[in-house]
Length: 279
Ligand SMILES: Cc1cc2nc3c(=O)[nH]c(=O)nc-3n(C[C@H](O)[C@H](O)[C@H](O)COP(=O)(O)OP(=O)(O)OC[C@H]3O[C@@H](n4cnc5c(N)ncnc54)[C@H](O)[C@@H]3O)c2cc1C
Image (cartoon, rainbow, N blue to C red; front, top):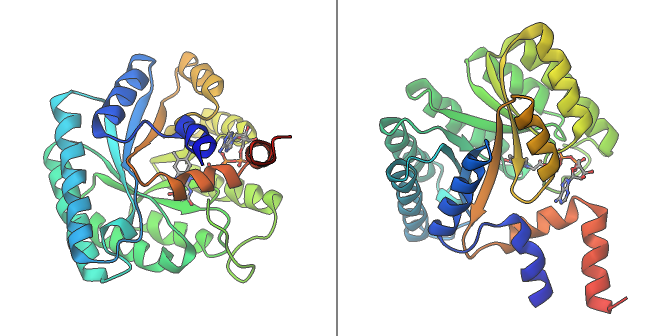
C-alpha cells in the first residue's frame, strides 16, 4: 500500500487545498493554466454532498484571492447525483453561480455511463443560465457522437476525452483504436461546429491532428492534460504558443482516481505488479 501511495503521488497535488494552489501556481509559472479538482465521488448522503459543495466554494475563493489562472472541475456524484438529481442540480448551480461571479470557469467531469444522461441534462440546464461551464464527453461511448451534436446545437462547451471507465460492449467501443478513431471523428465535428473546446488527451497523434486541423479552422482550442503525465509534451506545446492546462486533483480520496490512472497504461500496471511481487 505504501508503494501505491508513493506511486499515486505523481498524479495528485497533495491532500490539501494549499497543495493544489501551490501546484497551480507552479503550472502558471511554467506557462500552463490550471484546473483544480477536489477528489471524491459517490457520496452517500446530503451532508457529504453539502460538505463537498463547500470545499468547492473554498477552491473558488482561493483561486480568486491568490490570483491563480485556474478553472474548477467537479464530479456530479460528489455533489449528490447518485442520491437525488435535483439536489445535485442545486449544488452544481450554486457552484457555477459563485464561479460566474468570480469569473471562473467550471468543468463538469463525466463519470461512468450510468450517469451520462443525467450529467448532460444537468449541464444543459445549467448552461441555459450560465456560460462559464463546460462538460466532458468520452469518445469510448457509442452515444457520444449524438450527445456532441445535441450539446453543440445548444452552444455548449465540450472537453473531449477518451474515457476512463470500464464500460460494457453494448455502450462502448471495444478497442483502443476504435476509441481513438471516434475521438478523431468527434474532434473533426467540433472544429466545424464549436468556437471553443478542449482536447484532453496525452495521445500526441491526436494533439498534432488538432494542431493541423486548427490551421484551417482557427478555433479557440485548449489542450488539457493530467498532472504528472507527459510533462515534456506540455512544455513543447507551451513553447509553440498553444494554450495548455494542467488538471490538478487534490484530497484524501485519491484511490479511485489513481486506480483509473494505473489501469489506463500497461506500464503502470506492470510497475505495481513488480513492486508487489518484488520482481
Ligand atoms: C484534463 C483531463 C480531463 C479528463 N476528464 C475526464 C472525464 O471527465 N471523464 C473521463 O472518463 N475521463 C477523463 N479523462 C481521462 C481520459 O478519459 C483518459 O482516460 C486519459 O486521458 C488517458 O487517455 P489518453 O487520451 O491520454 O490516451 P492514451 O492512449 O491512454 O495515452 C496516450 C499516451 O499518454 C501517456 N499516458 C496516458 N495516461 C497515462 C498515465 N496514467 N500515466 C502515464 N502516462 C500516461 C502514455 O504515454 C500514453 O501512451 C481526462 C483526461 C484529461 C487529460
